[in-house]
Length: 282
Length: 188
Image (cartoon, rainbow over all chains, first blue to last red; front, side):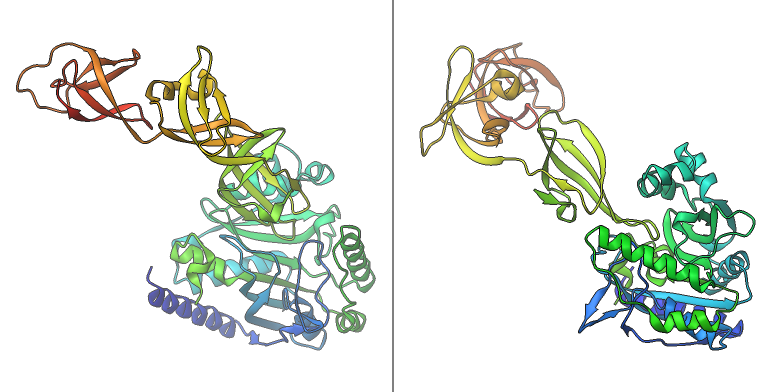
């Protein structure tokens, strides 16, 4: 597709996404791009900026807004991740992130599917959707349980080589219920604490987004960030500063909520049939 | 040593003492997981294919590879002997390494060598060489069709398919990459 045409397509899609959120009662927010403390995550590297960092995601800042009383918020903006360059990765990319108070992660998935269907103008890519648990996917496509793969440290390799290529072949696929060790900022399932209320979204083998039933327990969250920082230090990566504003928000009380982050450029790759993420950006 | 982040298509690496060239490369990062570098590669000696996935902390050996121009000299009864035009250093090469290329060697021809740990693993001949046909059924007079072929032999016994109009004593040009007839150079 020609660049000017593609950018027009991109713009139209952005407008449709925004419309959908406005119509659903969400307000659009802008949180700082240059921040003091990104969420400490095992494998996500920040780009530094004069003693601060460029955000890897707007997650912590948006959760602070939830604690201050915002109930439906979304944001579209640039995020930065160091050392991520490839056909599907860019150091700077555009993220759509949204949160809804009182929804569970399953309701958020249904909302996300409806949003994609509507914003894409009923594109057949987003016509129908399905749920599959991480463990079912591992058993079906790799012949092992996800929990064993996690224990044997082959989870990521199997995910990339065996699982992901199979996901979303026919329809939008929500890969749900990650092993608790991979909960990240998700709360554990009350029904089955071996898994976290987390899903990732796939279509045609391409990972589009990630969502959590948000962890609201301040003690547990501090413990997880401390563990992530300890992991980073043990593996020769720098630890991140304490996200004090986010901790204060947790102490004040984060409402029951779910949130999702979607790579807008990846969506455009699918919609435009682009092989390389650079093709869909100005 | 290479770091995993150095990996890319076309890079040559060493695994368990063998040289491999990366033919396909993809950076991957499953949600919240570690970065992974997926490589498809080809063994530069055997041609065998393999897939391998590296993590950011992996170190990869760098093969000792060198490209050099060599001049073909003579066959000593066991080996085909080449020499470096600058140092006159001789490089005997076995039949197995040369494969069918041995039939297309011409004295004084400049060939390109890829050396791995000092041993030749890949030898590229001049793309076209000329050889005389020593044996073939007489051609049908006036038949200039180039799409109907018949067997013929060159001086060293190598059998090659040539058009019907080629006769014994004709000199032809051969494409050494494929070992096939290219065109007639002169008539007997």
